[in-house]
Image (tube, rainbow, N blue to C red; front, top):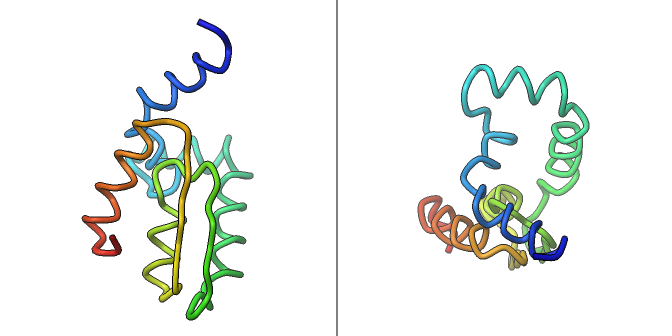
Length: 104
């Protein structure tokens, strides 16, 4: 297995764990993310802050993972939101999340 295949397998197999980075998850994970992944949280907050006037806009989310950006922007009335990812586990999770959030 080469490095690219290893990365693909990792993200496909661990798709469910990634949502907690954005949505809290457990108290322990929330603390860990707040302390050790501060940049990830700041990127999320800054992006969403500047994109929340999504009404009438289209967005492309490359490497969208769990679709947290896509679903948030779709709820903010974006005209079209497209997310792409190379990991089948992430794509499956994103499709389920979009249906659950009623934006699919």
